[in-house]
Length: 318
Image (cartoon, rainbow, N blue to C red; front, side, top):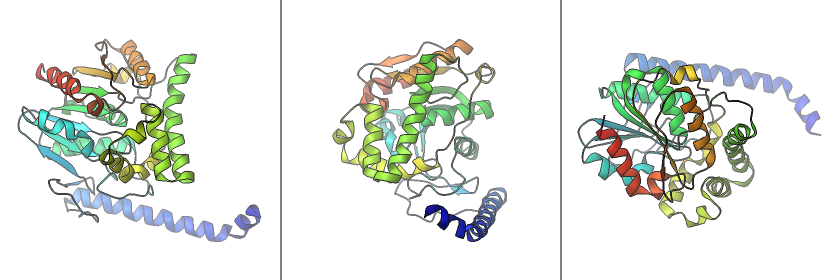
């Protein structure tokens, strides 16, 4: 029955695909025109108090901006946004200018996972352009989880914008030897993303969030999460549908990094992050990762005081 229905709609499907392609081209052109002409693209969604939104590469990019001094740019992970850094705002802004960005299509936009402008590369280009637009010079770049992948792409394409790089359980895809350990680490990251997407389509946002959170942080952690944390996750959950692939980083790329790098993981974090830190250190003499005691994957929230101390001590030396 399904095959007969599909066959009878082929002509309409082709025409529909053509129209979608045409509209996608129009939208992409609009972004390019808006960016190149300097015209503001006003957001079609409410902007919270205290949040700014310059037009960056044709998109109204939301961010928090606090404090003064050498800038620290905070890049959030999957299914979250600038609000995840609330425990860092006060501590970091006492001595630095803090920029906490919400990447394209994350809150405050209520995106449903449709379109082709969601990728690590696009997010890296947006953050790099924001750093230039704000005339920050060289910034301390902090990437958490998927935000680490964004930070790595900025470092590869715009090394002149970076004073230091902090990877907090930072995600990175690298070609590695085909060992059981490497395969397990690579599959763990990919499986978590794939399962999240499948559950989101089949079981809905609440169940998808619970399974994902428990896989990353441990059984029962979603139920223990504060209501505010759950709200942030559920307001960003459909961005998971846009995360289709991630760029690979080679040893040659890492060997070009001429800025200090801090690798950080949590004692209770998934071991795949520590594995890929080890692969990074085979390419270049990065310092040994620091391990925050008792911390789970969201180190900046689960072990806020030691996390803040470690980051501030590191950036103060550079």
